[in-house]
Length: 127
Image 1 (cartoon, rainbow, N blue to C red):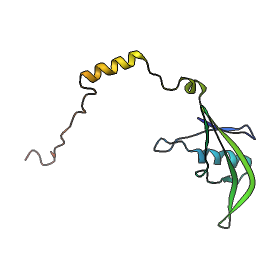
Image 2 (image 1 turned 45 degrees about the horizontal axis):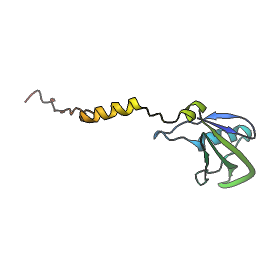
Image 3 (image 1 turned 45 degrees about the vertical axis):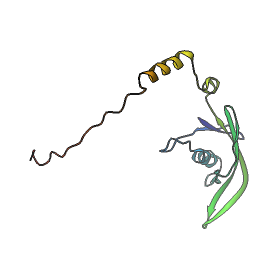
Image 4 (image 1 turned 180 degrees about the vertical axis):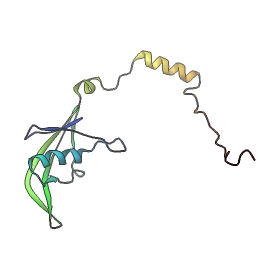
């Protein structure tokens, strides 16, 4: 996924954190920092993201910290989350063949159990 600033037309990749969640805040910070060095995106966690299939938009103000205080620039940037159009069009695919295979696997007991491995302490030389 990419984040696009609608005012400047610039885009940046939306990276994922260690939990696999998209980092919209970091992407917005990169784009604002390019236009206004020293500024970053105000906290976007409280914004209600306007969702549409394959599209999401939000607005955020550029701010900076001066002497421990947040200084608002008054500049509001509009962002759009760009998703891969092919992936959006396909969505989740279910077929009759997949459903039949799943039913057959269920009749046989479903997924095989994970093998259990016993760990022993052999540091004493077998004593």
